[in-house]
Image (cartoon, rainbow, N blue to C red; front, side, top):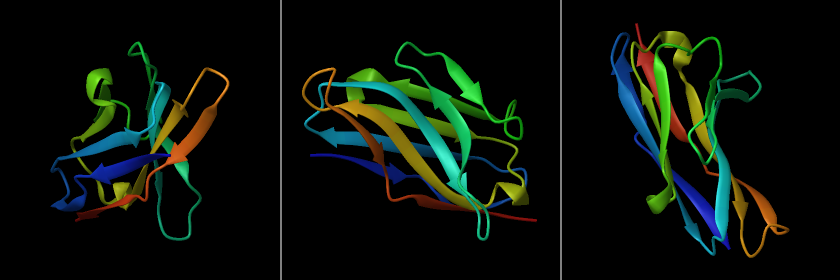
Length: 121
């Protein structure tokens, strides 16, 4: 079994910063893409940022220039540095990883439980 555990969420004032972490554990053969998604109350879950195993990144337009995604493959961990936070960034942030548990044919699309980020104005 594999799992993702997010940490680093909290309450911050507008303009502040937070750094989210997500660590994968369990029976891991390899991890390809990892990413962060968020869901605000009454809204659908949407992409924040994704990063490939070799470091290529993609960001939602709403966070580009403010957020930075990174990963440490040795630690099976992905990070999201969030700067210049805005109230509209308030959401539950979920970690996602494309994990191969045994071979390249045993892919598991894995989600964490989420961590709350609240930005006050």
